[in-house]
Amino acid sequence: MTLDEYRIRPENFEVPAGRIHLEAVNKGRLTHNLAIESLDPEDGEEPITYGRTDTLHPGEHGSEQAAITLKPGKYRLTCTIGNHDDLGQYGELKVVQK
Ligand SMILES: [Cu+2]
Image 1 (cartoon, rainbow, N blue to C red):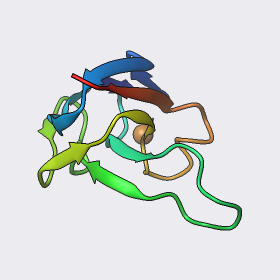
Image 2: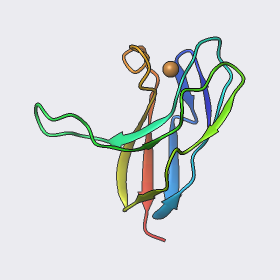
Image 3: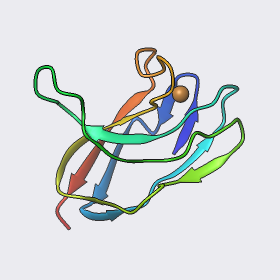
Image 4: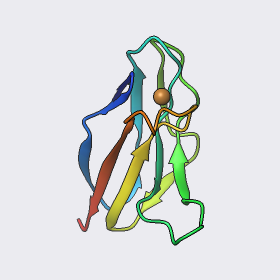
């Protein structure tokens, strides 16, 4: 997936359930990362983070810090740096039964 100011491309992505491999490249001018979070946290709850890349500097590639296994459902893709999510750097990951 590609990260820049302030987008995650593609914005919507579908993968089979099970072990997920993240592959991100930062094509922007600022640092970014890619995280997978729960889509709709309960009121007042922090979203659950299922996995993420390291902070990527411009031009850097990154993959998940630790193994990620996801059940079918919808998840949120986001950049957790600064207010990038508020600026529109998010997307949706759909995990489907194999
Ligand atoms: Cu960012």
